[in-house]
Length: 126
Image 1 (cartoon, rainbow, N blue to C red):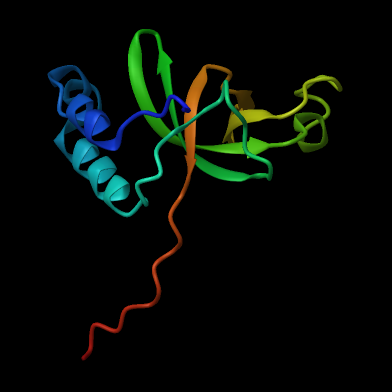
Image 2: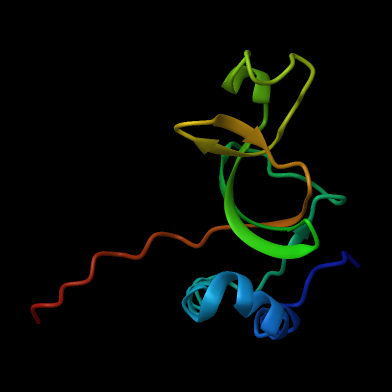
């Protein structure tokens, strides 16, 4: 059986004082809101597989001893994305893009999941 992070266990981690100190109460509420829209299929470990198509994914990783959840982009061929930033044999990977600093590889992602569908238009005038 794959080793997925249980959504309920993750929500417990999200309530930890350490996480709240980093992202604040609003950040925790935003992530909980986002997680509530994601079907309970669990996190997919990168040890098991990576995404098969380019796109934006919800990712879990640890940076400098701090657990992080962030939307990151994924490219199946980073060299095609930016041949000056990534070597020709770099393959696929998760990355950030900053208009000032350019592309940066995020190579410590341990789990990922697809984002939920965009909500349909809601008519508030009814």
